[in-house]
Amino acid sequence: MTITFDSWTEIVAAILLVLGTSLTAVAGFGLLRYPDVLSRMHAATKPQVLGLLLALAGLGVALETWAVIPVLIVAWLVQLMTAPVSAHLVGRATYRSHHLAPETIAVDDLAKAIEVQDRLDAEQEYNDNPRPK
Image 1 (cartoon, rainbow, N blue to C red):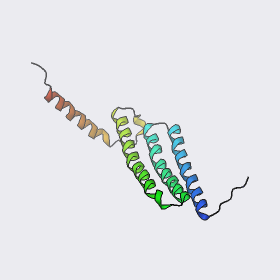
Image 2: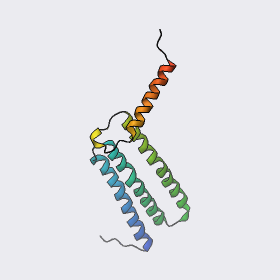
Image 3: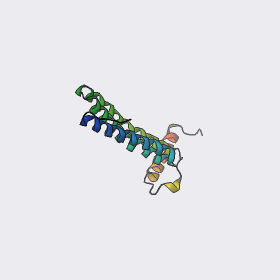
Image 4: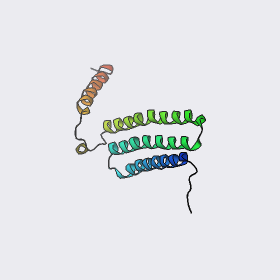
């Protein structure tokens, strides 16, 4: 079985699609392989967004029409906006629920800010619901 390409656009499309799907597969393997939530969060967002960009670019080149380009751009922009936000929320929820191993964090810049915020929340709750005398 031989594979023949009729034009350079098919070659470019094939390369972009293979690179895009490979990066997306790497993201999936990272989700399975990495030990903690923060590493998995990174693996789920960084290569996946670039992989989707390459796959959509390959699809745009393969279809050889300008009509689908706006749809592909919108699809990638939605992914580009939602992936970092969801990763941030997962990381924040994991940190706030104390599901992180302290030895995996090299520098904990949030510890002091969280401590201050927890104290302010407790004071606010006490002021809103004082104990009966």
